[in-house]
Image (tube, rainbow, N blue to C red; front, side, top):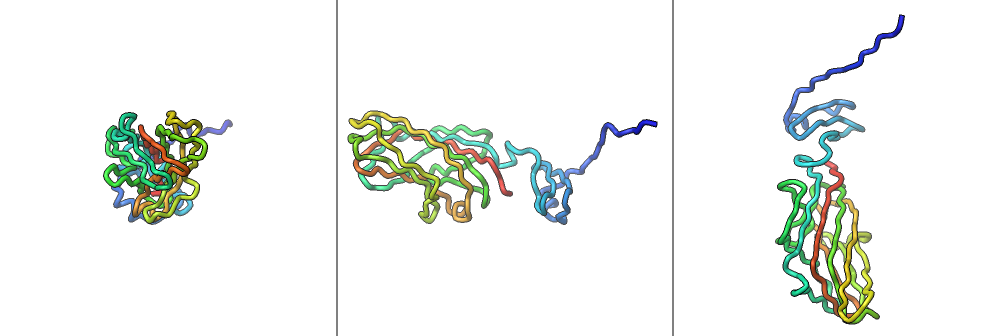
Length: 211
């Protein structure tokens, strides 16, 4: 006689609140549905398995366009002087309403939870009178001024005489407690001569949430 197999399984899980979920004992393989999504326990921790993006997850993206420093009003960089790369967020586009990874008032880049992962795209235009010795240094600094050593870039000036150049670069990083508490700031320095930057855009995407 041939074996008979079930071809469908139906399991109904009652919807709980997030507060109730956090009171449950950690049991490997448990499933809980809350208003925030579907959770399971894996390796002794709650892991959200659905949804992985969108409202309620903290995952998504926001684009911030600076409208102060434009081709008619460029940000002047003096030789050797480190300044904050400004962005007033005069134009903002979000993947969904209410999501923010940057404070336009404090110019601080934001983070939610320790070990969250972000992808940050920076674009702007720049120029310098002298290309022979001038370069720009872009660096992300934590709230206490400590640089994120690998989140930065030296930018060469290919042509002088204030010829316009385009900069576009993508950085990936995870955040520590200082970043979460105090935020971080993009700093830019022109070395070897004066320079100008304008049309600054930040595109920030949160790709992984530890919480």
